[in-house]
Image 1: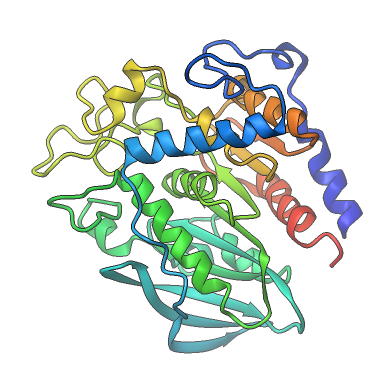
Image 2 (image 1 turned 90 degrees about the vertical axis):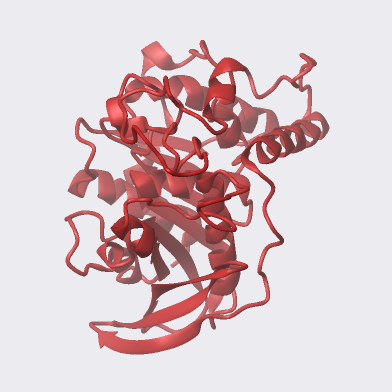
Length: 355
């Protein structure tokens, strides 16, 4: 399996020739904010801390991680060669959520993947759109999977997580989603036979943004796959890469007006500061190094996204790593059989190479 997995993903670690040495338009993560260059690993550790601290300051500091809780099982159902549990836990200090924990029948230590989306049903194969059943497909391959979603706020079209509440959130909502995923990871480590060192995260679109922020800001995620989230700020994609919305990085106190806008010209929250001061999300990608990630790119993330990704490739090179940043591309926003084949092989290679 591991040789097949590697052959499947290997071609996608290389940009096309025309993008091989392109870095333009993005401030180098290998340069401190005062302009000093990062020369070695010791410098990078300091620079990494500088990036993370700056972004946490801009997005809002997280409350302490809830690392002592376990899932409460609500009910269980045997499905094929795995058991599906409905579980409840605190993903913020004042808010519980329910999701699905899928455990394969096989014995022994297992890697795990968290799947995030608008609701938790789609990823476990309950009534969702095709090719988004990541949790179901991965449990069939021997992974423990946890499917989460913001069902309540999706129903009322506010979409995200607001801490401590929507009227007076103190964290930009996309970072609150990342914090919730970090708490989910901690609860998942308490599940019997889950290998705490081998937990990844995946999500599509809204879930892709969520998975990206979670894995970049919480380094216990061993690897990640971001499915067409729009990996950098980009106002040329209409509402596909809409970080200016109040449920992402444009939070302000409700009532909200002019949501689902095509550009960020009326963006509030931290979004205008990011644009004005030339911050971009490639700085967060760099926090992944040397942890591997896959961009499963579609209409929001076309081949030119290698330009920002090259910056993280350069960080990995400084640290002595190759084959840590991969991207597939397709014309459509939706994932398909071919893009998912690479995605599942990616998780098999990095989380279950000997299984």
